[in-house]
Image 1 (cartoon, rainbow, N blue to C red):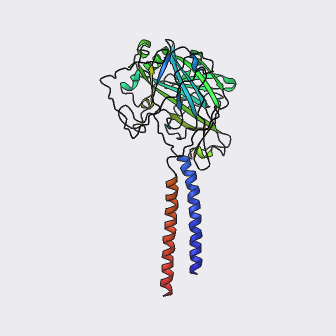
Image 2: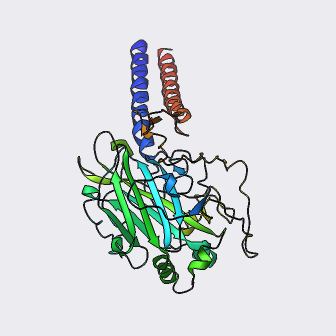
Image 3: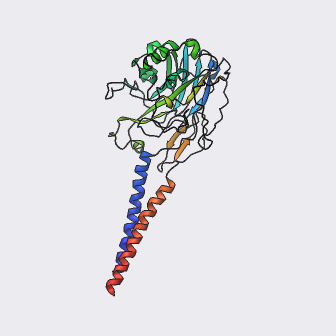
Length: 400
């Protein structure tokens, strides 16, 4: 009898351990936050006029590449934290407007078929129903400076439609399709898509005036003065077609059927430490999420340093939380190649495959996981063992 009970307890212990592992795999992967260990940092926009045709060539006067991936694009506004896309982003400027280009590698790319459905407030927040690349800009940090920390500046949401049609939707102020008011082009690539766009300064200035309620009045000369720094947010709305391969990344609260398009992640370049010294996850402020410091430079990429205003607190990031990364050297007359396609294996490990340069990069693993799963199994095993000991003691007492 005693042996039977012990065997049964051991069997129960093994079953519970297996169940715990399965539950861990599903629940943990569904809510996993991968490490953000690199500020997106700063960049100098060159004073040039690139050709807008969807073919990104650094020889046309673009800035150095700013590489984006899960380390410097954490999640925001309630969506999942898994940034699967990688890419390079470039900037330039002239007296007509600001230029942005992006070469995106996206393993779950969804081409837009039309505008987004309106949200509960009737707003079409991201413009289009496929993948959307968004430029958020607070020129000279002026909106943040007047205390608009809990609000938005204007957003410019860019997407690609079937046939390579490029679209831009302005949101957060006077939401509308402004494709005809900008210069833009996009194309699909073997790993995702590429885009180039010029947004006129007069549109940006009018939008900032409106979104600030008339409190922020800027001029082109002010924004583009040598060394002037603007706060820029690089954001990506990543959508995917639901299948078994991407099921683990779905928010468990969202009902999605096989073949449905759903929002996989929404990520933005939040700085590790804000100007006021708070960490990236604190405050819930929207404009404070514009982590890229974009300086206005000359045609060569030189930008003089500008002194911070006396009213602005200058806080250095703690050494323990900020990782300084070196800029990649610029390549002449060719588009910088992406560093790889990010995916996750069945165990939740981050795997980086070779990008369009066919070279594999180092693999990373989630910051959480290994120790937690051991802890879960250990607790379950300990409870079962204690129960077994108690049962054995009771049996012995009854025999006596």
